[in-house]
Length: 114
Image (cartoon, rainbow, N blue to C red; front, side, top):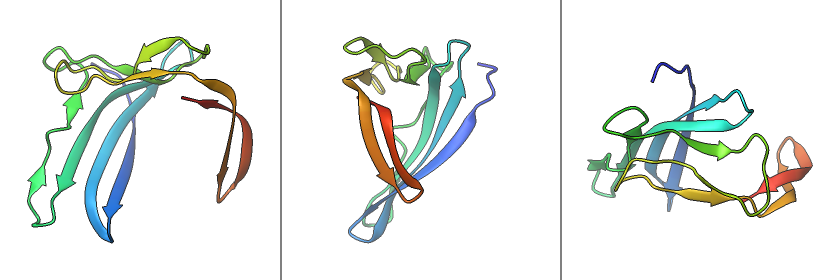
């Protein structure tokens, strides 16, 4: 779609083995929203075979970008996180604006919870 995106790699382990590697594509919109432009997913089964069924890309076959984090979040307002008809149709909704999270870097308050 001609949008420059940041690529984020995530890895999922199951019982000590690598089960999935995903590359997610994000970009910030003019309204401050973080847009989600798709993912390249590689699920790895126990026997070593791979499945890429969860992959999708905005702009291909009617797929559209979604919103991962609204720029002006409102409690209770639903939004589409991803859209590729029949393959990726997740929705989100802000539940709180006073969330707290603790990570190795520190504890942060006043966060969006969905």
